[in-house]
Length: 438
Image (cartoon, one colour):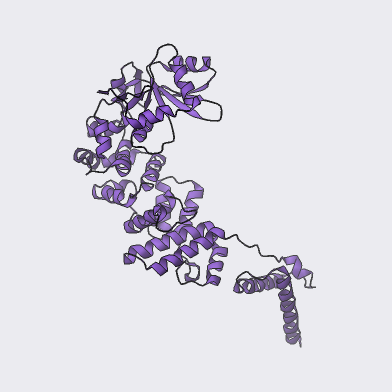
């Protein structure tokens, strides 16, 4: 179905096209071929949401696309499956895909053939809201009722949900992600039934593919509700069976995005949100990291967030300035900030809300954290030796004692003060050694 008039968001978008985008369109249409904006950019333009990439489609085959672009001085890189990446000055990229139809469907390994039929190409899309396209004149093409679904907040598969998921089981997770981002009505019953029935097939997906979709689900405005829906349908057990602290995740997501009290430097973070929904423990970390094939740095960070901390290092509204500085110095600002957010979310989840005074204290902790820079211990072993001590275990013992005293001062003592204190410790050690010798 074609909408004959341009919708105002599309019209505004077309009026503000950058020269680079216009160059790509002019190059592709120079000899009469048609070109359309497709996929996420159309969907998000219509909803007046920010978007990152501009994807285009054309009936021209990839070789022809390359020829048209390179003739206009645009560098191209073919990336397979009928898609060519156009590289323009300034580092901007565009993906141009030739219209396709499926011959054999098998997820990312589908066998395709090129076509000139726009509806046939749109039928390959997973959801109706992703099957929308728009030409350079602002005409919207909507073959499967995606506009109605988009504006009513209804996420619906193109055709049979069972058939679409069987083509690529990753679409099962994509359904929950898109419902989290675009759904404003009850989930589609036939889609949920298909997700329930085909959930065991998620076991065939690689950990990397599951992780990529899970990260996007966790970044949704209300990830806890989506994970609970997935658990209810028997889907979550194949993705994240360890999930248990859903209310803590809900509160954390709200804290990251709320506007009642600005939290400078706090952005939505999928790994922090993952930690929020998990229980503390090494076994949990190992299980999740293995299944999701987490990179080593992310595994270490997750472990640091789920490690049980001593009370003295655990952020809390009543902690003294000295305790706060010690925790920051010991854990580092980044880890301490994440732990603070998790503790604050846990406190609110446990009691339903926290007092205004407590919230002010949590904010103070975070603001102190944002300004914190670790203070290097300014005394070394050579400073001890310079006072006449022989190399040996006494050097390390004195440095540890001096460092403990430095921590007790709240890291306020500078090098001059510390050297004076060190001299006292050396004299005291000498006196005690003399007494023992006598």
